[in-house]
Every structure is written in C-alpha cells, then in structure tokens.
Image (cartoon, rainbow, N blue to C red; front, side, top):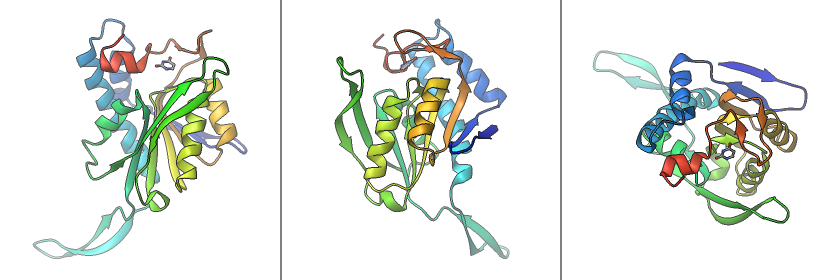
Length: 216
Ligand code: URA
C-alpha cells in the first residue's frame, strides 16, 4: 500500500496488491456478469478493510492459552460501517464477512437536478458513534460531493475516528474530500485519472450500483 500526505490534506492510501488488482480488473471489465461483479466487490472490500483497520486502536490484554499465559490483543472500540446508498452496500456486505459484529448505518443521498448537489433522503446511524471506529463506504470517489456530505453527516452524528473507503478515486474527488475533511484518511483500491463530462470516473467501472444490483 502506498500512502501520501500533503500539507493540510488527509492521508491518501492506495492499495498496491496483486489480489486487489486482479479483483479490480474483474470489476472494470464490461463482460463481467452481476454475480461475478458482486463476488469481486466483496473480495476487494475485505482487502480494503484490512488496510483501513491498520489505523484502528488495539489494546494488549493478559490471556491464557491451554499451555501458558500470553499477551493477547483486542479491538477495544465498536466498529461502524456507513455505506452511502446504494453502491456502498457492496463494500459493506463484503466487510461484514470479516467483522460480523460491526453495526451498519445508512446514508441515502440523491443529486438535486438543479444544483447537482447531494441531498439527504435517508439517514440512520448506529449508537455509540462517538467511540466507534467508523468507515464511510462508497465504491466511487468521483466528484467528491456525496462523500463530503456523508462524512459531514456522520461527524454530526458524533463520529471522530473515521475513514473513507472506496474502490476508485480520481483527482477532483480526492481534492474535494481532502479540502472539506482534511482529518479523514482516504483508502482506495486504485486511482483513475479523470471524470468524464457526466461525472463518471474514467476508465472506471461504470455505474457501481447498477452493476452490483444488476439494474444497468
Ligand atoms: N458513480 C458511479 O457509479 N460510477 C462513477 O464512475 C461515478 C460515480
């Protein structure tokens, strides 16, 4: 994983792993069927979770094996996943395989056709957000406006220890999110160079929600 931090901007971590690259190629390919797409998204979610969890607090505790005492390690904080509806649900579903004890909050945003800004239509967040390790999930960090809004909503709910996790990020989205929330690390599987004129990441993978749910 490579990490970069610029002055007054959050950390940006890009997954640099052959297993991630292989799953990402499946996601990108136009020929990938929805069932394969879902499987690849969930596998990639696990790899992204492993990277995000490096930043979580861990406590040492005295424990007993059948043979002798040892110093064990536990995650002392609750974990909360907050997918942005609807594409973020694919990342959440994958991560829950490794951390089924996590709570899930949901943030629903739509784009106002006049202002093109995200507007909240649904929000239900877990309790204990203030003490939780929180991952805000959206596969595509495109313009960054939804990400900024979702992170603001989760912060307003009390979260302080949060990271933004995506599959693909591109420069405008990174700049927008880092500008608004310089304290929030961004974890991405890969960086793509640009957005097209309708705000899709290029080369990207298309509409992540449509491809995950087979609605495209
Ligand atoms: N949302 C998507 O699903 N895909 C993009 O490329 C950008 C935003």
